[in-house]
Length: 226
Figure 1 (cartoon, rainbow, N blue to C red):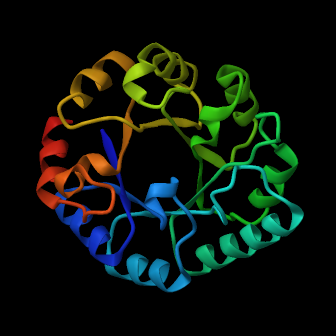
Figure 2 (figure 1 turned 180 degrees about the horizontal axis):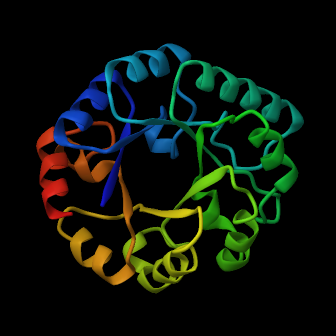
């Protein structure tokens, strides 16, 4: 079972790794759902931890709908993230009517190179997740989908996530379940859904608060539960 932990600082990254996290999602703006971190932060985190670092590519929190100018910014961000040695990027593009924006997505994928690509929780805003999944399966560059099954908490979408996991079982895509999971609920959730990777943010932070640091003891406890 792979554990991905959100980091917003170099200290977070070190704490998550010390607790046994297998991978980091590096972001800023955690209360806004995650935004692209500074290049200096990316550089220092990549250089100071040994576990893979996947970096958020999201220039603003207005929506997941991007203008041509937004996409130019995101393409340059991806180029720089790749040059700084990150293992992957986390991104997602939607049309105004909540379908995947494939023209925008393809424009971004031209810059990802050999990095892993996670399609983030923009996936939870699409009208038909199974249809969207079939579409994303056409892109070999995309290795993960981060999802709560279309609900505010993954715990409310056990059946949906199980369906997504079953559909991707023999493909290049992995379902990464996140949002609303807790250390106490995750063992049963994993058993019921069959997920092989989980994503934690607030659930492994001090006092359960988004703006508190990652607690390595909570990360270690979670790893034992998994």
